[in-house]
Length: 482
Ligand code: ADP
Image 1 (cartoon, protein in one colour):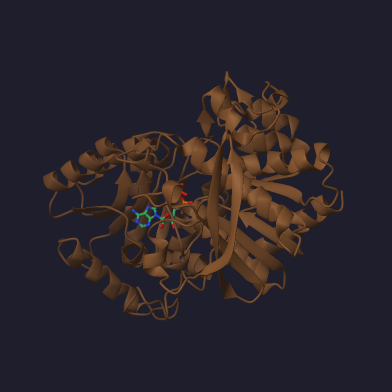
Image 2 (image 1 turned 90 degrees about the vertical axis):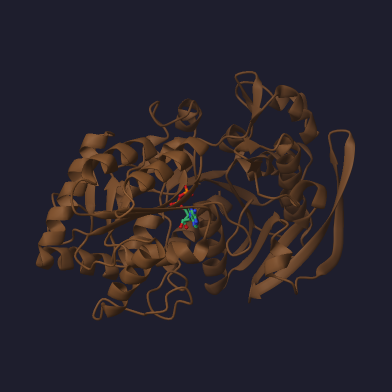
């Protein structure tokens, strides 16, 4: 098929979270399966540092954004056969210190930046010479692209318009803006009503996509059920229930070319399910790097995360406070809300021989942490898919997760299936339930046979992208032939 993906972040070019991993891997594996794939994404300031050979394609575009005409250059890269990345080079919008916000505050022109980005995606969908059959947009930043294609198909006579697929990576982030920002779309105001893009008087980019996309997917089957309920819907559950006939949950895959324990540039000591010495070495290296005693016996727990409410940081801090009295160590890599960053730094200051904290974003360290730990903690309040629990499985690090969204879909607890168990699950959102799960981890650590059984199950589990990409193609075909 011919598929154009629109995403505001794409690994390895830009990333703040799982969206980047997913968009990058999906594009790569669709192209590997023989499809013609394009990816449209902003050209951020750090991209030319990492990819200095990237040149201008010589093409550009000029689009109206409200009353202003904005131009952008299109830079292209062909990282693999059948795959073209179309970078939107608009330095005023995208050459910033970070992608969406600074010092925890969203850029005040995010509506302008991402309405423009969505317009570029719809424009390419219409003008690329290879004529995409599917435009696959991701998250609110590309949400209006679904509406723009719908508009041109239904009101401007674009007979060969692609079908649109929209993937929700996180229903909590919706792209809400004041009503007047709808003017930036240059679309008729009749779309701005409660059955369209309007949400409590403002413009909601996620809602626009949910209402107008031909097909909606989200990143795990359980999250697909959850977001259509009031408890997880963030106000959009009713809108989703109306579109339930086109909503599908597909669990993300893992790019095992990158997340691997042998031949990985970030892991100096390779290991495998049959030979775990390299993992023991990774643990010692990690303990040393974090200034903790290099003890093989001490069970080492870790987390790599954005430090935001969703990730269950509050219950994690109190459960750790309770559990650190015992013999265990904990390492964190994360950044986000200042109050959580401070709270972890204080925890480390109180327990210098047991807790190590790195505030920041560090891709190489995220691999080393996954490899060096015995257990991975992921006590999310909600979790659309979650990738780190799946990376942990492959790295032989036992995940301890709260049973929500993709965490529930990917982790099997001993109480569910003794033979297939690969991790520890808890249900209540409370520090007490998490502390109990950590206690189970400590008991498991003392039972080497059972520990090895779970670890082997995890390391041999298969969440490969080949299969996931096939599921997307099945859905694209269904949409294309409607
Ligand atoms: P989310 O998208 O909600 O942040 P996911 O689990 O889906 O959560 O994906 C998170 C991705 O971002 C993982 O690849 C994880 O390793 C990475 N990540 C998050 N925080 C950091 C950090 N501080 N340093 C390096 N990688 C990080």
